[in-house]
Image (tube, rainbow, N blue to C red):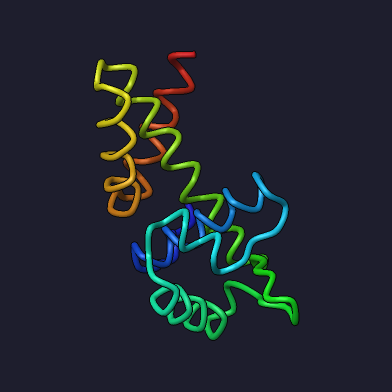
Length: 126
């Protein structure tokens, strides 16, 4: 089992948001991230700069934001964790709002071993 790279919760949330927005809209700009996450423009700008420096996102001359291969891998992994954990919580009777909120918290801290077992269990259920 490959070890999961460690990123901050904030970085994972930004990358997941960029992934989701790009799937919904096709293109993503900082203003889209601000609206989606409820953060100010300066806060998002600082985060984007840090993610660019780490090689997780690219920003072109038109300020379109795209995920690098590494950024996409982190985003997809984070989103998968969110979906599996949400599914499990909903399955055991947690309300939809709470399940999605809790999944967002848990997805960042759950070990790879526990996640893989939870994922296998959810796949077994359906």
